[in-house]
Image 1 (spheres, rainbow, N blue to C red):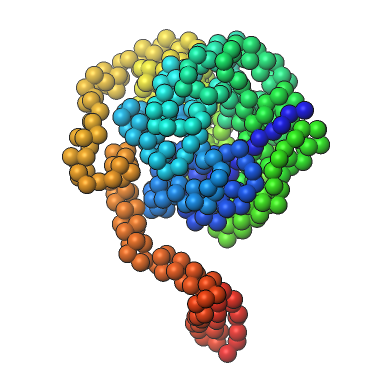
Image 2: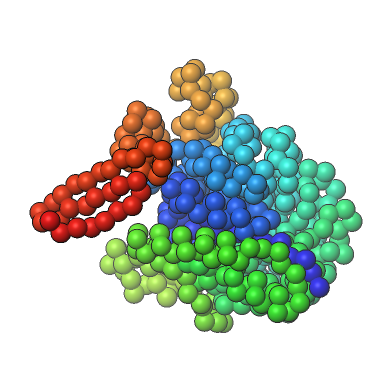
Length: 494
């Protein structure tokens, strides 16, 4: 039997899969991380660059302070970051100097584990990203093989790709990432041994899979049977649905099968209760068990992409086109050479499919992102690209003007632009995000530092909980008054 280590993905992938990436705030970290830290997880998948951007854009929160809050709350638990190594925050390629700065900052703020996944399986790029992570001081660098299904994604294809990672000293281990939840137990049983045969130094010992088809809980059990010792899971309400297998149920099933899992279930339940309460208070959805859908294996579109596209078509008064767009996405993916259907390529594929359907002619209009893909910005396509589509891409203004793109500015040039006294943290955000969004975040941060509402409420809560400082607070409205004394409360009719 296998000794199993669990990685919790609730705050990153669970949040991104079920709460649109915007549900987790800094106060969520502060509330739930103490309990998460007592569970005994191997690591917490804390964030990707999406969460960095969301903190600023939607919550006006300092993302570095958010990481600090998690580190303080769970000081003995490994915090992890997921990257593709090609983009940070933006949907376009990020210059290498900004990527190195991002890695340096993550490590400075206490993130010590990094998962690297290149969706196009550009292994040379993944190896360089691993070296950047090691230069930044990351303790544990895990390179991923991204699973999908297509005529070109065979067992031999995946085995060849993983073999390219084996001699990179900056990589500590390899994991199998199944972002669409396409793996089945039988597929895993043939694929994993085939990939392991190509590894001499590294070990494939970690699995990340989603519940889109409802098979993830069973697939994870098969992984444990194969000796894969590190499994990703989430806590309700951020489990199931398009997220990951429910951690409490997974533990019970693993133990029933004879595998060993050393975790504190009481702490797990406490963390789950905190997240459930937050979901109810903020009217955030809870993941539910998915029914098996054979049609999903045809288009493989993530649930979030489908829901977003459906909403956008409805806003245009074209909701009836959704089935045609989904069907067209299958053709677009084939024409593009079978890229994996995950962010950002899932969005590129569906957008181009919508342009084809709405325009009534295939590829009359090409999105800039599809042109960039065909020009090799994300690495070579896994399979052959349709010749007519490639000719059209080369004939677009986007392709013809690529040589006119200015060189990426140096960090010194960016400091001259944004101010010599700017922190590295703010420099990175200002270099990659709209000025008004970063400005609003900075203003809010300074307001709180100066004693804004949040700081005042926090100070009040701390004072009320201190037994050495007896105090009370009361307020009234109409015929109702509210009275607080030393952390206790009472609602009284006057």
